[in-house]
Structures are given as structure tokens and as C-alpha cells.
Amino acid sequence: MNKKQLEIILSQLNEPLRPKPLLEQYTIPSSLAAEILNLAYLHKDIKGKTVCDFGCGSARLAIGAALLGAKTVSAVDIDRAVLKVARKNFKLAKTICESNGIPITDVKFVCKDIEKFSAHCETVLQNPPFGMQKLHADRMFLKKALECGNRIYSLHRGGYKKTRQFLTEFIEAHGGRVLQVKEFKFTLPYTFKFHKKPKVSYDVDLYIIESTGD
Image (cartoon, rainbow, N blue to C red; front, side):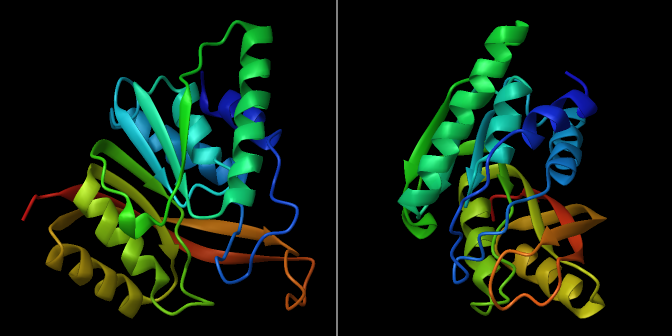
């Protein structure tokens, strides 16, 4: 499956009808999800690997990993309502795959506070809260990803040199090493009542991280 085919399938998945502002439930655009998944695949961090999607939301990253041949996939989120959407999305993806003869790995959905999750995996994919509603909310996800995974693909608010420096130092202090930072745009449609525009684009940084086990 190439990146364009992956994006087409992910674009057909549903978004939560009533996303929660405090949890910053912004659905990752299908094009950006496909970019991240393709990068991880090319770096040999998806196919045949055990993969976790932390704060999975509607599970585009988890389902994408399943489409790209992950050995196992776990999608973790604290919100039961959004996990219902995620499960429906997996069923939809599975139907699309079955009708086109495309293999897809099963996804295990886990309703749990990320701080209480403890299973090990080879690759963590995550689009954590940026911390715009709850300050430093992304730190908890980074710490847990470094505890659980060997290789991490983590999306964070970009455009600020100090933020990148802080996150790099934070990652190093918690047993990780930043291998690469890639810049993308995160286009967000009108989602919450406090939004003032039909859509807005944010600068985001994808951190590709290796756990050093320190």
C-alpha cells in the first residue's frame, strides 16, 4: 500500500461528533497521518512491529499501522465515547480492506489513563494534546512513550525555537534521544465554540525519538 492509498482509506474514517476541548481531541488530518505513518514504515518501525497509538482518538494512526502490516496494534485512550468511534472506524477500514483484498492487522482498543498504561511495544505513534487547554499535557505522553516504546513518533506544536529546545532537553532527561525533527502543517477545521475561523493551520513538529533506556 502506498502513501496515497493509505491517505484515501484514512480520509473515509469518522471524527468524534462531540470532541472534548479539555482533552484537545483534534483529529489528525488524513494527509498528515499518512505522512507520519509512511515515514515510520520507511524507517522499518511499522511492518512486523508491535505498535501503540497513545491518545488514539478516532484511531487514524492505529488503523494506518494495521494497514501497513504491524504485528500487533494497541490503541489507547481515556475517553470511552471516542473509543466507540475508533472501533467503528476499524470496522469500516476492515470492510474496505476485505472488499479490496487488502490485509489488515487487528487493533486492540484500550480504555485507560495513559499514566496507568504499562505494556511494552516497539513503536509508539502519538498525536498528544499540545497543552493549549491544559499546560504541558504533552509531557505525560512523552514520558509514557519513553517508558513503553523503543522508537517514538510524537507530534507537537511547532514554530517556536524555545519549545523545540525544551522538548529536546526533556526527552534527553527522560531516557530518549531525538533522531530527527520534521516540520509539518496541521490544518484544523472549526471544531469548538471558541474557534473564530472556519479553519486554521498550525506549525507542528514531528519528533522521531529513540529510547536509550537510561
